[in-house]
Every structure is written in structure tokens, then in C-alpha cells.
Image 1: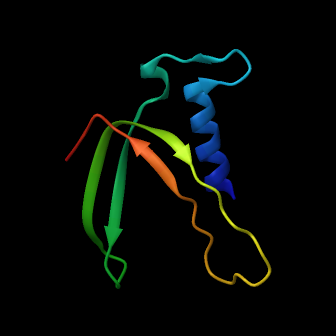
Image 2 (image 1 turned 45 degrees about the vertical axis):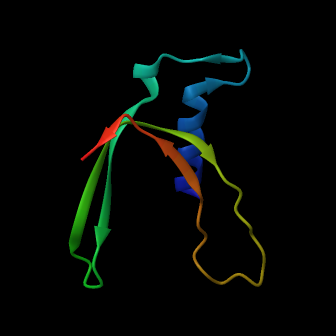
Image 3 (image 1 turned 180 degrees about the horizontal axis):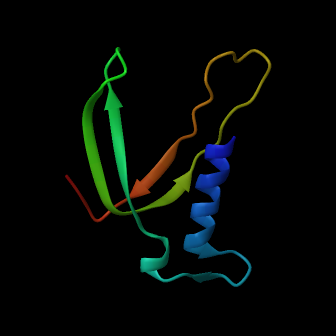
Length: 82
């Protein structure tokens, strides 16, 4: 759940729920890399997102019957990519 907590913290840095104000754009945007690996674990493709920030975090379902890896759906906005 550390990844989900980090994403929620990032979303909170965009909008302050207590004061109902947005923070400055430069304070919450980050450059990020998405690294896709092949079956052997080698980097197959790398995409860099510039000035990225999360806009939404989806719900996750936790139950006893689910034995697979929990996935957290996240929507990321960005200025450009390469």
C-alpha cells in the first residue's frame, strides 16, 4: 500500500481539501519515467512524461478471494512525452 499512499499524497499536493485551493503548478508537477520490461526483466522501452501529475486515483477492491496482485488505477496528466 506504500505506492497507493505515495500517489494519494501526490494528489493532495495538487489540491488542498481543507482550504479548497490549488497549489502552484510548479510545486506538484514532476518528470516521470515509465519503464516497460521484457520477460527476462530487461528494459524494453522507456517513456518519459514531462510535467506530470495525477488527476485521479481509482478504487481498489480488497477481499479474501482475490489472490492476485492488487492494481491501483491512476490517471496521470502531462505536458509532453518522449
